[in-house]
Image (cartoon, rainbow, N blue to C red):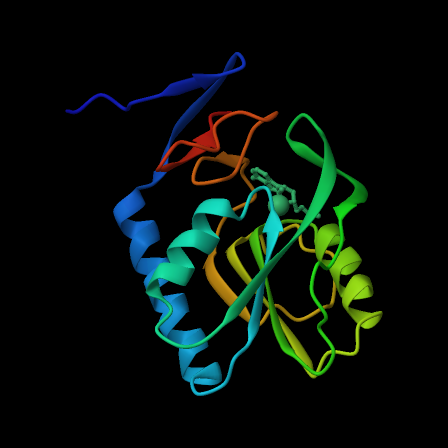
Length: 182
Ligand code: IMP
Ligand code: MG
């Protein structure tokens, strides 16, 4: 039997969860699905920094249509591996979104607190439409009733790192997804 390749980040042990080849497939499918909706038009894809970097970049490489991109940066505060429910805006909309079709890209939706904050931020803009795309979603802990239009993959309520997602600032550069060992 092959040994499980555990990794250690800041003293915590993580075990393999989703390989980069599988993530690639999920992201490609999302690109095609979103293109089926927006193809022929020019939506603005907004990445929520920092966690979205890898997902956003791979999504864009696979997106065959016209688009513009923008970023917002939010910081959600975590007590170790649990959402604290506090979200701060570090950087707001950099482009005029009046009358634009907007898709907000998140690495992961957990409790939905960040999404709620983004939804409020969008309400201040005069967008034509807005949708949300997330690579990962934890349905067991989602507390909001805001719809999530595009979900890459629902996952159990376990803390994950890699592919842009961090544990205490570390692990974003790992190509695969690992999950916290209990
Ligand atoms: P929410 O506001 O509770 O939905 O949490 C959203 C944010 O918390 C995400 O954008 C991530 O930055 C972070 N987060 C939630 N779950 C995880 C996880 O399992 N690993 C790493 N970051 C996470
Ligand atoms: Mg995030």
